Length: 413
Length: 107
Image: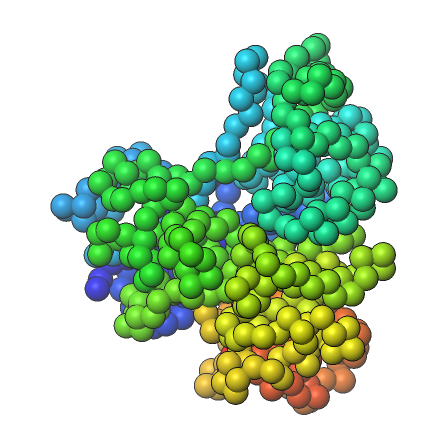
């Protein structure tokens, strides 16, 4: 194999490029960056970067590192994949031939749908979005956040800490309903309320009335009104599947890949947020939006392209920093038939172990990074009968690892 | 400006110069040093930026915090007296040079 082209220079694309070099790939690596900025990390945009504005802290790699590793970083957006000729045509008109193509094209924001349109509604996905929001914060007094997911709540916590009036509206009856258990959801709602955030749960946004300047009034489906001079929405994303679909690749809720992350064309792989893949941790194919998944997908494909073909089986994990609290989730959220609470929510340190069919399925940890690390290994080992030990508060998290079979103590990627 | 040398498990050395205040993990990430995973981005919550500080350099650093110690108990490669998470190693002009050995595995 001579030439590998990677579309998308986010966490997945960038990691794939460097992992190929780390694995000794000597051919040409072209990394196509569709954004104006040099490749950067996304999680800090709603956290540290929103406060500091320091770009040097969020770069994925130093600009010199690309040349140092002989990675051709080019700017452009792919317009078409010509599978017969094995080349990608960029908007600039340039054609990039490939022996293997890696799609790491990410997602686009789901937009707020109200009769008057979403003009004036801000989203927080790109560095550009973050810079615009940072610029608006000094003159903002009242913030309306649509969506009580990770990004909405991180932004709510950050602006509440700056003394702004913050109101959050979400169609779900509890915060982070998609990602967390009721216990964790309730904990975070209380913490945000203690910090001054007001919630409007179980209601959607029916209309947004724009007034002079930046002022707006949100009308909720329950008839409530929220006055704001900054409206930010974090209501989810959709995978970028259009390019792949036009090229005739299978797409569903994401670009469809097999357990090796290969698309229906063996010369094309898809990784990260855009890929729908089979997982030993889920009954049906899944698509995940996380740094962990982006990085581990990238490494899995880089290994395969350098001769080490292994199915993808990494334990999913997620994190969110909200105010001074750190939430970490190992495994996939979902139904549980047994649940064990370890630690004490009153003291702001606890974990929720959730079991399905006798197996540990997920662990949500609040301000307990060591328990989170243990959880990742326990879930990766796929061993059984841990519920009783986990319920025993006298058993330290570390000791739970002792129940694992030898050789299983470290979850493999 | 402090100079930082990473030594791979195979003994390959890479020296980088760090400008301004930064963590050793951040410097490793920016320069694409393999074997420093730093999955959580430096939040002291994943234990995948484990390094062994060279014995000659260990005195240059303050001891690990309790939180870092808890995480070091769980790193994948064996914990040694010189084990640190390099997201917690803050570089400044007071540290002229540092040699960090990368363990066999971070998982």
